[in-house]
Amino acid sequence: MKRLFTFKNVSIALIVVAVVLVGVYFITLTPPSEELAPRDRVAAIIDEGGCMSCHSKDVPKPFYADFPVVGSLVTADIEEGYRAYDIEPFVKALEDDTTPNPVDVAKVEKVIADGTMPAAKYYLVHWGSQSTEAKAEIVADWAKNFRMEYYADGLEGDRAGEPVRPIAESKNIDEAKAELGFLLYHDPRLSVDNTVSCATCHDLKTGGVDNHRYSHGVNDQLGGVNAPTVYNSAYNFVQFWDGRAKTLAEQAAGPPLNPVEMASTSFDEIIAKLQADKEFVAKFTKVYPDGLSEANLTNAIEEFERTLNTPNSRFDKWLRGDNEAITAQELEGYELFKKYSCATCHIGQNLGGQSYELMGLRRHYFEVRGEELTEEDNGRFKQTKEERDRHRFKVPGLRNVELTWPYYHDGTRETMEEAVADMARYQSDVDITEEEAATITAFLRTLTGEYKGVKLTNPNEYGVTLDADHDHH
Image (tube, rainbow, N blue to C red):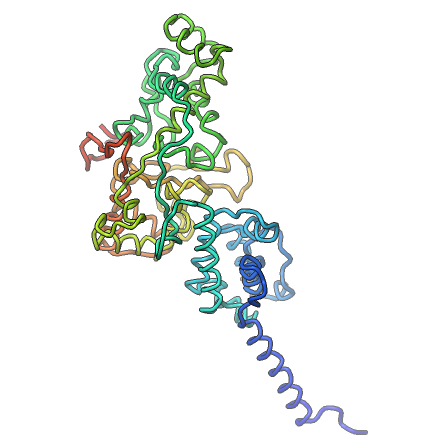
């Protein structure tokens, strides 16, 4: 009986397998066909890279996920990948030919350009899945063209594809409604004891915030989260750190009825007080013929807040072509800002406000913080009750950030340098130097804009310290 397997036969079989694998390897390294539409080429790159294998919900696990040792590693990678980033909305937008979230565009562009995704241990098993310069160039060109079309702000040359965009002047404002909104925004009658207005916590003279760790409501009660700036809030895709308000009008309806903030029992109570002011009622009904109502009051405040854009920062002038608007150090800070992935979430006109992101993406922020967790620390989880959303927050905008201390949702960082260094540590897993933190901070100072033609300033003293109650005085 002849031996079916000989050394020669085995050798030939191994050579054939090797040739096939090498062929697959080089085929998948080849960029997608130029005959495809640009977004289809990007979709093909994502598919070849296996991004959906880890960065999506309930994906089928590979067969080796059942193997001892390696299986637990694979499962952990999949769970961590989805925790960090869900790529499904981006892929669906490409497939449906709809507009993807600019944050998704920036994230995919960055990891492909850096070659950090897919991770090395993934493409050791899935040959050919890694990024290449050719693939990175395809994605970068598509991303640049996407931004030029999406933002339509007229940037030219090398700056046309930048992830940060200039702030626009407020447009299509109903001035009569905005004037009423201004009055209501500063009116303490929205609070139960007539002591607190919207401007109490969001003072237009101090960067749209109050520079407290936690704001003071009626009876000097402390809130549980740092007050975000009201400037440029029209650019936010949702309002509040946990995203519970979809519009500025919804946001305006919240604090008046919050028992810690303004503590009114109902809008009927507020309206009863306002109706006693005959002059105000006459002015209001001239603009809103159906009179005082929650919908009309919050609509007026919303219209006023839409006027709070702060254009013409020095960085905006640089984006529009003025090379003298910022210094070499400030420009270097912007390059570091992009290098360390800050510009994957802090993008667009407001440098943020376009996505929810995990606080402590790369290192566990809350364990290191040491303070007892609060309900507000749960972030988006408060609204969705989905475990993935625990500690996930709406990304704050960075416009006028030099004026809006203290920083983070919990107000625990007093200086920009400290906030920048810790963001790099917890979000990007990078320990930057003091010099780099100072350089990035120099860039951030170029983002202070103008309101009604006057550059914003903060008359409060900088560099104050937190007292025992963790509050500024």
